[in-house]
Length: 353
Ligand code: KG4
Ligand code: ZN
Image (cartoon, rainbow, N blue to C red; front, side, top):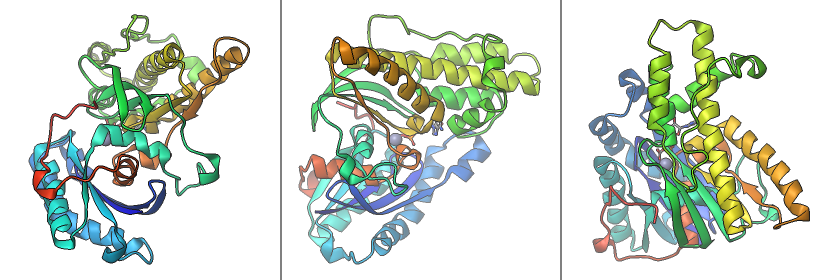
């Protein structure tokens, strides 16, 4: 089955053609990030105006790049209905509905946050995972860490999702973005902090500045990141030397990733799952991925002999972590529930489940 995915929940305008939920035939993303860099964040009206200009060329390009695929071969459309910015969502949803009507194709409305997790079902073009390596097994614990959301969920099967916890204030990506702004590192903050953090060797950076690890030992699966931003703000009150900026970038990345890894592994242990699925823009963070890999290696060694079988760790290639339409199409394939186009509406405040 060939699905055309469309994604416009934030500042990206994206379209992708995906076969059987796993094989990416094309994946086109147009971003207005350069416009937002000037203002240090997204201005919703500017994002939506850019998306109106880009949406048709992006869809055309996605079809053109998926060799041998024409409109006739497309079996269905999938579109993000929320959560996201209302103006941006409307551009994608209204375009997808018009195409479904004109082309007489089924259309599947998609929850952007659930869809992020399905990036783990896609075979990455960079060869990170080949189809023969298999697909994630259930039950699974999923951590979705993006610019606006931080959610930990239990997936008993496709579409069978239970919310375990989430952030009580700022999202992990938001914390990266706000801390980067305090450190004058630009937008988007996650990649900027990650680059800055590498400027100071790890053994020297440790212990120089210690930021809190909010809620790390609490007996729940909730997170809180707004205090970290305030702690960075306090540290950065005086003029920042180059060294202090790098140490702060290093430590904020350590603090965020420590909490995310600890709570996710604890959830995996509690629910005795087979897989841990990482997803969302922050999942592109190398330090986060490395920490998961090394801590799971240790925990898996231990649990080989006791408790439970080892966890499989799944993380999409960095390009598939940030917003794109390939995982929208993948999610639609694995949760194939078309809805008459007239009934599809944007839901800016949609929750993961
Ligand atoms: O999922 P996403 O592309 O868009 C939303 O749905 O929000 O996530 C964007 C977020 C931003 O906050 C950005 O700073 C963060 O993901 N991000 C990263 C990295 N790349 C993107 N955070 C940490 N390290 C990265 N390498
Ligand atoms: Zn996203």
